[in-house]
Every structure is written in structure tokens, then in C-alpha cells.
Length: 314
Image 1: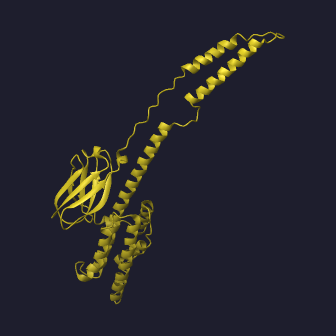
Image 2: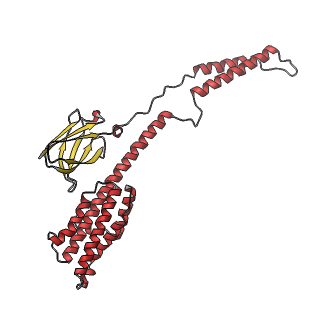
Image 3: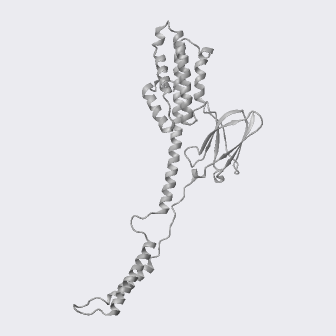
């Protein structure tokens, strides 16, 4: 057994409440759950060498803030540095912009009103004196200046709110990350269902052919599924490639078995053989590159194959 040391970097403020799970990537069982020191150091002593997956969790975040595969080396201690994205914890309050002081503008507008009041009530034919005209022109000038100041202090309807735009951008970013995390989790769960369905279909075909799954002949089929079981956390492109490769190999094995059982027409027409053949054909079509597209493909598989084989095991 070896010692594993993780160094959590990026956001020390979260170290106090973080927990780190070490997960078996095949069985999905939690091997260890440890908490870091305040400096971000996580020590996992006496752990078997091999491939694992770590899930870093925080009570204020519903989904793991980080999930990635790791490998414990067979010789000497293993040291791994993990960077935590501080934006996972970002919840910036809306910026409080102080109210604009409109009192000087109001005073100036009131002064203009008082200035032009005395210039009113002219009678028809009464001359407009130069001083009256100059007073009115000055009042208009002051009113224009007050209006200019007002446009700088308070924007009209339809103006931008920078403080709200920043918050909306942050919320949108957090929501996008949540959607991506949920999509990845749902896809990985669906991959496990898909893998177990194919494994059960292989077992049914072997039972129909009277072949022991633990025999060398049976292991030729069952070992092919292990590649899918170890790739459930891979990217959609990588997992899709593994599915297609496994489907091609299964198709070759099944065709060889059908040739061996050519004298038994009941075997070729068995529901287990037809079910596995359908799943193989659908797996060959899996060329998705995004989680959303993969989930849609999995729905297509469920509509074609159904969940009866899976539900029998649950």
C-alpha cells in the first residue's frame, strides 16, 4: 500500500468545509473520505496502487466542485496538486451605487423659473426691452446647463445598470456551470445503465448458448464491457469511441457464436440474441460529442431497447 497526498490550491477559504472522496472508478464505491488541513493538504495513507477518481465536495455546493481521475503510483508516495476554481463559490452582492445629488440641479431650475416669471404678462404691442431679452436668454442658457448636468447624474429610461449587468452575468455563468455539471452527472449515470444493460444482455446470450460466463469462451464477451465501465467519466467523444469499438468487437464475437450454433435455429431466433444485436447496432451509431447529444442518443436507445433488462436487476 502507498500514501496519497493531495494539495488543494486556488481557494483556501473553502478548505475548512471541504471533503474529498476517493472513488473506485469501476464499482463507484467510495474508498476513502478525508478532510483537508487548513493549508489545503489532504493525506490518504495506506491505499492500494491503481486508478481512482476524486470528488471534492462542499456543503454549499450541490454537486462536486471538482471531479477527476487520478492514479496512485505503485512505488513511493503519490503527490497530486488540484486547483479549485474560486468562481464555484462566487456570490457577489449587487453593487450599491450611491444616489445622485440632484439638489444643485433643482436649485438652478428653481432660479430659472423665478427669473423668467417677471418677464411674463406682456401686453399686445408692448416693447420687449433689451434687458428683458438678455434675462430670458440667460435663463434659457442656465436651463440648458441644468439639463446637461441632469443627464450626467441620472440616466433616462432604458439606460444600462452596470451593477445589475455584472450580477446577471455572474448568475448566468453559475447557472451554466450547474447545467454542465448536472448534464455530466446524468450522462455518467445513464452510461452506467447502458453498460449494465449490455452486460446483462451478454449474460442472457451466454445462458441461452449454455456457456459459463466465467469460462474462457464467456470471458471473451464479458471482458469487452470492462472498457465501458472504466470510461463512464470520460468525455462524450472518448466514451462514444469506446462504445463503438466495443460494439464492433461484440458484433464479431456474436457472429462467430451464431456460426457455431448454425445447427440450432432456435438460438438465432432467441429474444436474448435479438436484444443484444439491437443494442450492438445502436452502439455503433453513437457518435455524440456533447453531453446533451449523448443524453438524446441514450433516450433513443431506451425507446428501442427499453428498460426491462435493467429493471430486472434492480
